[in-house]
Image (cartoon, rainbow, N blue to C red; front, side):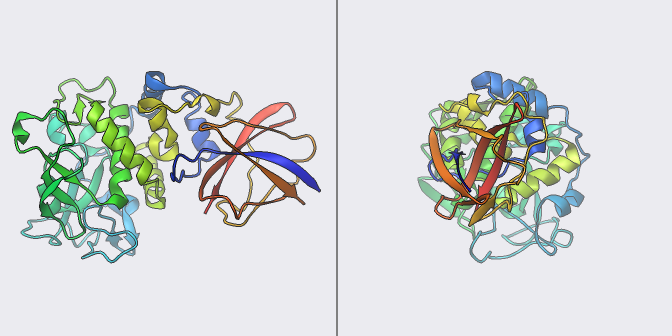
Length: 357
């Protein structure tokens, strides 16, 4: 049997978007279809009032940041796809004191705690921005902003840089040398999405926060937005981020929206339109395509018969028509990424997603 369906690709440049489950769609239901400040405010209302944990957070890293066995992910020392110069173990490598790289790891506040008045909850222990990192490199990063380093004064073993930058128009008086910290390319998107989360989670809850190169209170500066959106686009969401987002959700009860729906960042700080994401029946149980993720074929459930009508809707405008043969779709030629399928069944509207690997 032949039938045409419209598959909606929401790829932006080479971005690879993670799979959004029905549960996640329901979680963001009140935000879907919004743009700009309205979207950011709605996301804030969804992710605020999380269950914050008491300091320190060592024990949680066994759930959020395990790489293999007992070794942990460390954005300041790991080299995805390569050989890390050293590895830390979740229990045995905790700082302690350090004199060199590789001595031990500690807690890194990606948004420096200096700028939210120090040891204040819930920011202090918000796992969406507290990561295990090399203590020595963490100290080097200090509270410098993230940005492109033009002249490196110091480079870590994995290639992270600290040095002079021209990334910002305005610099704090304490950063008279105009220093920035630049992580390796494989983690730049991670950093961007963490910063987007913080600017959203603490929207309007930033009384007493200090201004710095990247933000006024919890509001990102135009220079920071430019840098972070660029990193967000060039380093798409990884499986590591998706796994961590789910682990943190199970611990503190809120999610990072920019990992689940990367396009939200462009709909708030860029020029993308998220209105097509709206679905009045999003909380209804949706059909699932399988296998998912997949690299070759997508199988359409038998229940999706002639009563189903597929609608075209796109965030970024790219529509693809694919034939369905005996309830199978050949997707081998599609680029990797997340694809949306919208359809109507028994007078109810749904959308489903699949991830092409």
